[in-house]
Image 1 (cartoon, rainbow over the protein chains, first blue to last red):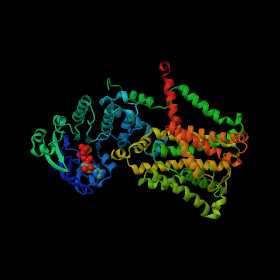
Image 2: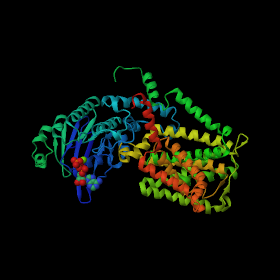
Image 3: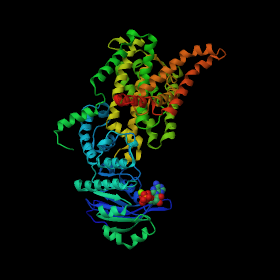
Length: 260
Length: 353
Ligand SMILES: Nc1ncnc2c1ncn2[C@@H]1O[C@H](COP(=O)(O)OP(=O)(O)OP(=O)(O)O)[C@@H](O)[C@H]1O
Ligand SMILES: [Mg+2]
């Protein structure tokens, strides 16, 4: 449910593609500084929801408020500049750039050098690059990516690419972080690393995190609250232990292997 | 991050890490190479100097295309049309308005840039094949304009005779003198292209090329950067066009044509898209190839006497086409990539067997 001091507030959002209702009158709020998990079977509308937050998908109706801004009225790049960063279910890195430059590219929103500065690369453009490099190096250290700092990311294995994706989002220093299945396709060890990173980020920076994840055990471990979607409808919302016992949730997952 | 160090130390170490050329001897080598180029008139034949002039100017045009197509991933078939634009602007300013060349050249570049930006507008809506078609329009509209508009100024299909540049009382009317101009602009254009590629702007360009959706959702205004890329590419074309026009001293709607636009793309593929060495390698290789085809022509006729004389002319596109095919099959990342591999192997030298 929504309350007035929510960091992010989604109200009555409906989104359809032709005949398919990807989101049907979905409402929920994310409190400042919490980890809110969004779960649901395949095709439930989780990614579509994130895309609406980015205003990449335009809801048919409803409103989305973040720190007083109506996100449905802003272009995607402006939304990022407000402090919303995200990772992608199918990693969407800048494959031709190194890990370092992927993160530097994410510092974009905090940099001021214009076209002329870049052409001359003297004074502002250069000193700005050096200053931001320091922030980026801290993130590289934090995510234990020193060894791939200069590697072109297109050639990295899946697990590391997921990590660069997270690093890139972190480099934006967001106040709201959207994570779309950051652990899919990882082995157990990689998953544990990732979970540790997410918890660390949350502890250190106190940012609000929206986490889409299929691994129910993991969700129960790290989420403060859970929102459950099924066929585009929000069927439950609450703390993890309640969700686990929720009748509607169990039914939605019945016969599916997702819940563990 | 280990032991905290004073910020100054970070700054110098990051600055050093960011530097392109790290060893003093590399600076000296580069310097000597450039000096040797400037000194060409003292030890090379006139035809060699002319060829180097042409290659230098071609590299500038291809560098612009590289910023747009190589770095930003926006294909363009209009680069020669923007050369035409720059050429006409500079020629008119110098011939008709009596402007000094040094003032006309930047204005030609800017003028071409603005026209390039206008023809880049379709990129906001379409990509790939459709964008290629849209930029192709420039290649029809601009020459049509120079042929048919303001005949008393542009002189129709006849075109213009273009004056030699005058700088500080010196008339640049021989290939030897002109080399100074074309090399100087080339050095500047290379430095600027390098700056773009390592700066905020260049990272935005590559982000847009590699994943436009992610780039947009992560805070980049794609419209702005696409238009800036089209603008910059056309600025480079404008410079190249003006330089070429004042060099060959004549200009009409066909001086820079669709064939050139296509060859520029081929040069970029052969040299290496999205690398600063790409345009340099590509333009040199293709220009030398064309030169070779011209020299090889008479020999070809002695080998196959029955060949029509026209077929010899046809050798150039044939050589170009075959080379392009071979690169696309065996090294689509171009010579610049080969060069990187070679350098890496060299650095690992003691361990590489
Ligand atoms: N661009 C689109 N065009 C048409 N249909 C779409 C589009 N994006 C999503 N959909 C549809 O909307 C529904 C929700 O998809 P979405 O990707 O949001 O699900 P999800 O919960 O993220 O699933 P998964 O767990 O498989 O990632 C699906 O039926 C999907 O086919
Ligand atoms: Mg999804």
